[in-house]
Length: 544
Image (tube, rainbow, N blue to C red; front, side):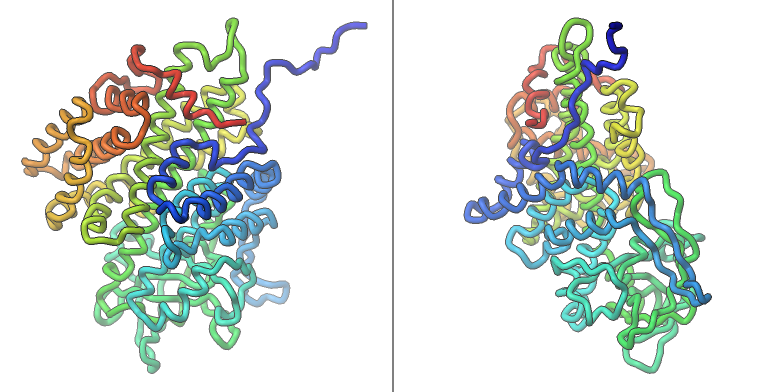
């Protein structure tokens, strides 16, 4: 009998049935570093439960189903009444419900709340990034609402709940609620002050009627939204409930859903307001200042989301190369492939370490930590999110042609990878925000220099990079044109300082040699061959 032509050999097993959290040494160590000892067991236990879920075959199937069956807009019911609803596949609701129950909207009132949530967000992103938007919006709405104690008392318990209720009904009848956001308009983009949505005061104190549109409305299936509109006193922040207390639907006219490059399981919409009831949040004319804390929190989630995508891409690439053989041995053992994998692993670990450090600053809440966040969040958001796309593309190439096939899951990571760089202000917006912090808030730079200064003397390349950075900061003439380069340097020096302090010597050495010492190429895989790259790759390998 002729041998079968369909015997499958030399194909790596799927990366499934593993603990996404425990398999990530950099993340697990960061959690241990930033969480008080008496909470270690509790936090690790909850992250282990989530990590096992994220790595399970069931959740991976849900993620595939949610992407293969994207949301649909339903503007009218069968009788012609406007309903303006977004319909999702059941797997989407399972994923979102799991995220809510895991505390991904419950950071503000728990000890070490931001670190444990940040780690969970990074883990859950690796299962499916599409649920990150509603989870992030809901989490980030809390500090904005706290500018109005009455609103905060009403809404915060719902937003920080671990109960997911998908049905649209009056919020006071729900045990848990989700929030979205609408800032961007057609004519303004990032220039939110150019918005034309108008807010007319009503007789009821604090109540307004909105007329206008939002070009991008995040999480349009939510129970409430924070939006910006032009009140008589200037640009103001408003809370728009989806359903009014009497059970009637607020005027929330969904025009269409965006057909996006990635993030396919999630809905983003265009929405019209036409006599829409809203409640003012904060004072008239203080809209940007009111909503800025929400923006800062979502920007950190952009860093976390990108770090999660990078980690999953690296995990898949290393796993593949550990099992795939070519040219007489494992790909993992080939010097050039090892160089590529080590370079990818360095980028991923640096992103994770920086993101968790920023989350710890939120938990601390002290003046110096707040000052550090003012400059470090936009710098991290700029750099980490921009590194995500080239990393995921290179990681997919490690799988060869298999990485270009949908079944591998890598194309989904590649399509998702540019999103966080655009969301909540693209690269130029972040770089200009860094400049504002440098020129208007001297405490921010002082806090940054104190942070990186804790690593001085430990690596000569880091010391030299700090010196070059100080020289560049001493001359801010014409700085706007070089704001991107300056922001990149701020992020790289901070990453280097953190890795020198916390990472294994082989990781810190390789990062400083390449990112700070100039021994690096324009593409991944150009690390100095004298480094201990095998140790870097082995650290990044998911235990399976």
